[in-house]
Length: 96
Image (tube, rainbow, N blue to C red; front, side, top):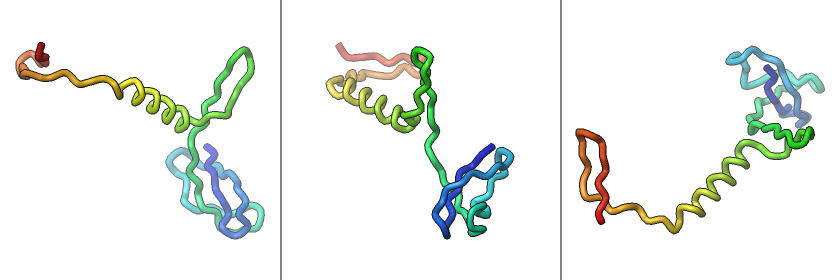
């Protein structure tokens, strides 16, 4: 599996191939032989629409958009007033 690194000397980015779970924090730079530090990046999601693939949005951006939309929908909702909780059946009783 490829892992991303950035050289601390020449600041170029490169990938290094390691087995899953065996990647190191540092790797030798193939350009200047300096030390590269591992870079953690968001996961890209490929979206295929009408035969065309788009890699423009990352998972984090999509989750932020979904959370914003959910917060907008929930802002006018009021939680129900609870009268009691039935521990035996697990039912929540709402006030009317």
